[in-house]
Image 1 (cartoon, rainbow over the protein chains, first blue to last red):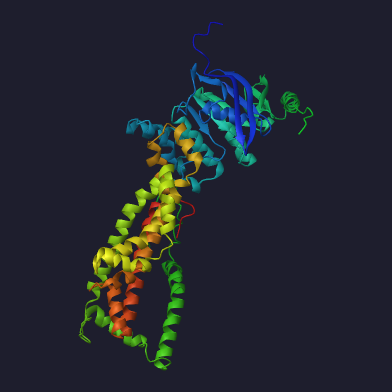
Image 2 (cartoon, chains in turn red, green; image 1 turned 90 degrees about the horizontal axis):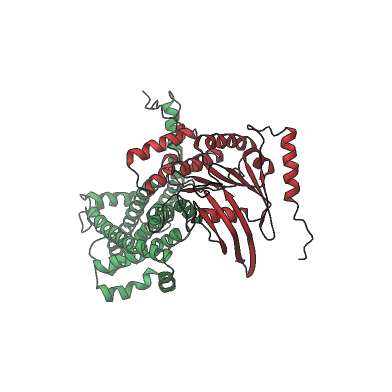
Length: 259
Length: 286
């Protein structure tokens, strides 16, 4: 218990209410979560469970209605390059080439030109887009676009990578490839990853921890450690056991509710 | 003999034409041009038939018009007041078209950015411009002559008005409709506040801004005749007005053709610039 430094991320009793068409919505209710450096945490849950809201609060795009989110013990007030976001719909800058998209962050930070160039080339290679370095986003497939989105966050020295259903729009084959590559990058870079998904299988395949969230109001149902050895075999009985357990937890909120 | 480059650069998206078949390639390249000429040639044929058969006596034949066009351009056939003056008139009109257009762009671009990005500016200025916009340029003619006098300044002012609104409206639309995700992406990459204007808003609005500039330049050519009704001695509009008062239809037609061709070439140039600057945009190829 002699922790000298605070955990990389702390979410303390965070609530988030929205008003949508005059109706108050409790997107997130009393969520608490502590994440240590190097963890791979998956958030799963049905739509409306607040998993994306939680991610956006950590990113600094939203501020909690009550409670607080901390990075290294400091309150998260606004977006920060140390917390990179990978969006489901990529959100690449369409007017920049692959190389320039990756260089966006380092340029905003006004790093020296030679350093920016080296960083770009390194991450272009890391995500395997050497041949497409000068292509524009609209010329790329979905999988390639998401590789660029990951590379531009890494090129910016992000410590935490927040991923909002990043592979949701991809076909199954591409999805599996990118899951592999992401794990590979995570192992090599010691990144901290928070990965939002609605696929139990994806969560078990990737996550060291799986946080199950349930809707109405959005809250954290349980926090589960996954100890299966990697690479994980999705067809193994152990994998299935975890799947069954999580599935039960996901549906635990089906208490009758008066509309 | 073929000029296809054996480039090792695999990222080039353009397919190189099949080597060894330059004739075939030429034929394929010429096809759009040939198709584009079908309607103008049919019109020309109809004009020729109609005038040589004397369906109307007031319109000269294409051959006469062509002859007059040569005289208008270089002189030496009729040697009247208009012989060999095409370039003078064209340059006079071009200076008004491009001058008025440039001034319109200079005012409309910053104003559009302001209205599009600043809510207060939008609330103050937008209703005013929406109110003024439906007033056609022709309606401004008398007032413009009072305010700016007879002559070049009036013409300039009217061209300015014609080009102003499309540039303004498209700029407003462009800067207002930037995908919100791009701001989030920029801010999580460390580009926040005012820096986002140059690195996100402007490039994202560029396609709309370009559409506005293109429409504006087209309208500048469109209103040049009205602009030059204000009693300027030179300009293609002035030539057309003179042709009307002198009942010289061939002069009117020559003026029309020159305006059409000049406007077309000017549109092609701005389109080429746009296609180059917006080569990243999947849905911008005019």
